[in-house]
Length: 337
Image: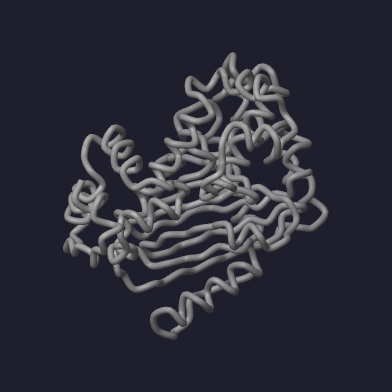
């Protein structure tokens, strides 16, 4: 069992060292302290057959895997988070899920991911090679970003089994049994998802798999102002009609999905204290908008208030003093809306 602790260095140096070490153990992600709290973290990890299992304890933190991390070549993999103590918010694949103790969520390492822990937490992490997971759970992309609640199906069994196996690894589980118990754990995980999401829209694995592929492409290119149904169809070699058909069960069009996801990402960023010195226009254009009035109008339609008021409200709710950024002429149409 390997052990990793945040060292005694201060501030950004401590987090940078942790990020480098965590990337070597699990995958490349960026940890950043939340709510200006001092950063403390502890990780215990080990291989379990083809899997990597780790127990993470950390102070309030925001963890992100963004486009820069995705550009680094690595073996395809999935990550399962099982919440042990405290709560967290996971934004992934167009979903936002709040995890309570006992809940779990599946994430695709090839897609952007953001996890926010506003208080000290403990979580169990499973890193699973893509081919290994797909042998047990076909089309796992259909389930990414969708939380499994501890009260649903056999989710509690998954959590109990994973924690128990981690304890056996700490005590020295024999190598000859690790492959076998890893397979059993993956079978239970697959059963948990089958029970929780056995719904009509998931019956066609081909259509649901292609819909998930489209969503993954959108998430990876959300900042591109030229992203559109036509560009998506061309890049994925689909006809526009077929693209509309595979999205028909989502209760929103492809264009509506793109707009909603951009607005959600903008809403998160403008309320992030680390971005309070940046203008609304800068953030909006960074997420693919190319018209400040259009951003302001659609933001108000979705969140029932202008972006500046939304920022002030959320920052004040979080105990962060609101400070209006320096405004240039080209930004006034958003700031004053």
